[in-house]
Length: 465
Image 1 (cartoon, rainbow, N blue to C red):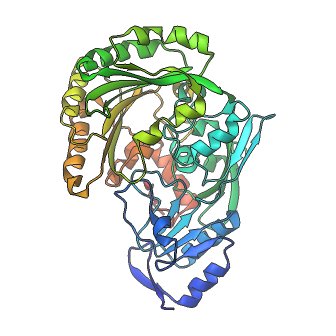
Image 2: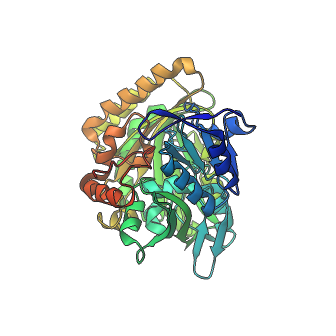
Image 3: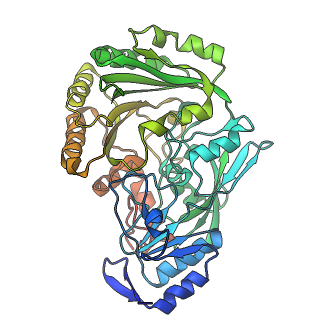
């Protein structure tokens, strides 16, 4: 076999001799894939079809010891590193060009302890898999809006989801993590062990190491919730957003409502409320009665359903393989001018698969102190997410341009802050805005745990040492 050309952390190319590669392969319980190996092409593909990168090596880890070996190998050879959990990040940060991809997607262990209402899960688990296990005991924690999202990236970035107004963000429900840091050491971080690191991992993304397991606090939920879609014609858009603006500040923590623009399967533009009430169904029916009485919906699909079914609603709306480009910001101003701007911008949508939505925050999210976790933007009432999706690469430019123009038009009404998990590949300059006043504290943490910036293929917090 020939030697292998690889990319270093300095962005330069070097060569690994084949004996070195084979030695690394022999050290793994899992699989090491090179570009000519069977399975390599499938392993490098992720949810966003825009991402077409080719790692020199893919280490498909079977456990924490494999992760330690991969981190040590990358550090010793100054290899560019990316970390693949669920592979759902829109920026495609799971996959690097020319470096080592540490692939955790086969680490699927889940252990639920119903007595203590906790669960420990490995980083290759998706929210669909996690919820299936915990719901067997009538338990859940805040999880992603898209069930195919991996638990790892969502948790480390903060974690928005249907249950956040009742139980806080995903990261607010972390009990501890096991993490391999840049020095190859496996550490447990919690409020009592490496508390500084635990603080940074709750919102700081993948900047501090590779997490090999997450322990979560669980809550009684379901198995049935009151959820689903209420769809209105686009002609009712302004009134729908005005109603949303007045109604959402009055809602209890058990209710989360998203409101967005979409295109129906028949090709008609619509506005849709997505509802999740996680308390008793009878109470929920009374709470959402004003929502049901608003306007004349073209479809009312809200009703009792399994929590797992609600989590899976987005599976058909956001399938793997489509080309995706996103823009997002927290939103404070939902006045009539902001509403008019959104309506005008969506009118020019070039793809029937693209959507724009407001996610309702507040509740338990806002009751966590801004200094308690690295996710510090706790006061915004809404998050605006513009999800552009299409199928033909020839249409890349017009879809990306539409997304950017929509976001730019909304700038007068947006916060500078942004949710890190929604940043796309070209938004590294917004990373400091993600964290605001906590950014320097994160830099100090990076200096301590990853001073050479081994973990840089992310929304990167750069060390200063």
